[in-house]
Structure formats: C-alpha cells, structure tokens
Amino acid sequence: MRASRLACLVVVLGVVTLSAQRADPVDRPKEPMNTIAEQYVKLVLAVGQHDADYVDSFFGAPEWKVEAERQKRSLAEIDTEAGRLIGRMPELSAAEQRDPLVALRREYLRRQLASLRARVQMLQGRKLTFDEESQALYDAVAPVHPDAYFQATIDELARLLPGGGPLVDRFDAFRQKFVIPSDRLGRVFDRAIAECRTRTLPHVRLPDTESFTVEYVTNKPWSGYNWYQGGYRSVIQVNTDLPIYIDRAIDLACHEGYPGHHVYNALLEQRLVRERGWVEFSVYALFSPQSLIAEGTANYGIEVAFPGEERAAFERDVLYPLAGLDVSQAVMHDRVQALVDKLSYAGNEAARKYLNGEIDRAGAADWLSRYALMSPARAEQRTRFYDTYRSYVINYNLGKDLVKQFVESRGGTAAQPARRWDEFVSLLASPRLPSGLREPR
Image (cartoon, rainbow, N blue to C red; front, side, top):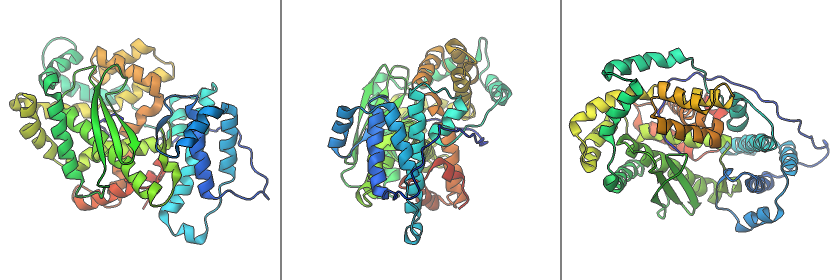
C-alpha cells in the first residue's frame, strides 16, 4: 500500500497461542501440497465473504470465487478446515528438500494458514494486544520505543525550523513550499514512474505485457494503493484528499510500481503461479505474513532503485522544475526530511497505544502531531487507517528494516549494487516469510 521511511531496528518477538488445532489421526494420509494450496486459496476467498478487506487480489479460477460467494462458509467452519489442513501437511521428500523454494513453500503455506485462523478468530470476537496481533497475523513484532527515543530528533528539528508556535505548525508551514500543484500532479508522477521503471528493468526480467494505470481518488484512509489485476497488470490509486509533497512522487512510484508492489505481484504470477503451478500465489490475503514482505520490499526498493544521493539529484534536477517548485530549497528539504525519517516508528507507537486502549482517537492524533509531526488533518486520517488496518502499520517500517537486513546479510550492500539487486529480486520472487528474514544465510 503506502510507502514509509524508517529508523533503527530492534526485533522483539512475541508468541500468540491460537486455539487448539485438532490433529488428524496418525494413520490418515497427508494431503499433497498442491491440494492444500488449492484449499488455502478457497479458504482465503471464504474469509473474504466475512471481511471485505481480506482479499487484496485474486486472479485464479473465477469459479472458485463464485463458489465462495455461493457457499458463504461460516467462520467456525473455516477455522476448523484451516486447522485440519495444517495438521495434514506432508513432510518433504529428500528431493524436495534440495529445492530451497519448495522448502520455503511448505512453511509459507503452514504460516499463512495459521495467520488466516488468527484473523478468523478476531472476526469471531477474539481480542489481541497490538503485539499479539502482529505476531499472529504478520509473523513479526515491532520494537517498542519510549517517547524519549523520538524527542532527540524532535529537538533537532526544532533547531532547524526556528520560530514561534508549535513545531508541528512550523513544519507544516515549511512543507507547504513543497506541495505539488494539482494541475502538475499527473506529469510529475508520470515522470517519476518512468524513471523508476527505467532503473528497474535492467535488473528484473518482467513479461513484455506488464503494465499499470494510475487513478487519482479521494476519501480513502491510505495515500496510495496497488490493486493487482492478474495478467501482469495493476491499477494504482493515489489519494488526493491531502496535499501531495514532492518527495511522495518517488515514494509512490517506486513503492506501488517499480520495483515495488507491481513488480512483486508480477514476479509471483510469472515465476510461482505460471512456471511452478503454485496456485496459492494467485490470491493475496492482506492480513497475513505476505504483507510484511510486500510492504518491506516496496519500501526498501526505493533505496535500491535510487542509491546514495541519486534520489535527491533526480528530484532536484527533474521533479522540482516539473512541479514548478523552488530548486534552491531542495537541500534544506532533504535535511529536514532525513530527520523526519527517523520518526517512522512513532506511527507504530501511536497505533499500539490506540489499539491497546491506552489512548483514544484524539489522544492518538495528538501523539502523531507531537512525535510524527503530522498535521491535525493528516493525523486524523492516520487514525482512520488504524481503525481499518490495525497492526498492519508494522509492515512498512519493520518490514523495510528486516528486508534491508536480509539483503545486506547476503552481500547486497550499497557497495555492491548489482548483488543488491540480485538478492532483492530473488526475495521478491520467493515464498520467504518474515521470520525467515532473520535466519542466517
């Protein structure tokens, strides 16, 4: 969905005990993996009948969707069936274990099914804390940061943006200099998308027919969204409810397009669904571990596509003139934005406090204004995002940190850009789980 910028990483693991799963009798034969994969897809579609946000995309057999709509299986039945499938997953043969992707696939299906059960139980009324929920749904828990963690950055920004009044107001006034005029929005985004694509294609073999369209929408709780259609096509929507700043052009073009969500989904369809016949990747369950990989790679992809100072140079030399903005302000903008990036995890803390009932909506908006420097309107929009997507917020910043750590641990450092692209693309086209990002090579 949206792009976010990140700070440092401290991984805190949590454990959630789901309701007991009924084990199959030991003498009952295990299901073939492809059978389990097909049933998993059908269960995701069945959950979608109870949760309108759950199925992010589906491009598999149309009759499966029709069947889900006709049957409308109960949540209890879905939960029981998911538990049954987990219990009947086969062990891998020696030959299968030699294929890393096959081994990853088995664990992926098991964990996606467990996440599906957690979501179903939440829909049935089960209450989880923010961290319990993120562990159960996304296979990860974000670090906890005290207010003091953000205050040092806030103090530095206050010195950089002197004047009277609250810092959030001074920051908002400063940011107004960098709003893309509405009549120039299309050309700025088109140019940003073209540059992201140009930088991605030399490193990623995509189908010749891949493409996406961009739509500008309003009244959404997010700033941008990729709706994958299948057939290597996407619809990317950009929310224009609030002002769109110049830095968001590259953020959204990379995150939603190249080498972000559009490339991620196209590679899964090409390499896993069509080449290997793994139907589980024809559906995307939004509230699942897959989302941390999707959002984390989409955010880290910005750094991969625009290493070092290349992003700042492109914005200054190309996008600022297209948007009609004062190029002389670009350096100051980058200094301020680099500090604001360090406040990324403030949004997680606001969501954690809000969803755990420690603060109400007004308190969450106030916290976001104080420690994330969001204007009142943007902070209120963010609380609406929390209402809908809840602990999903960890997937942006923690996701990026974990992806970056994983790619660099395998040699994909800034000093080896070709290796970084190779490791990044390999991750995009794999069934690796968030917990797998922490494993040694």
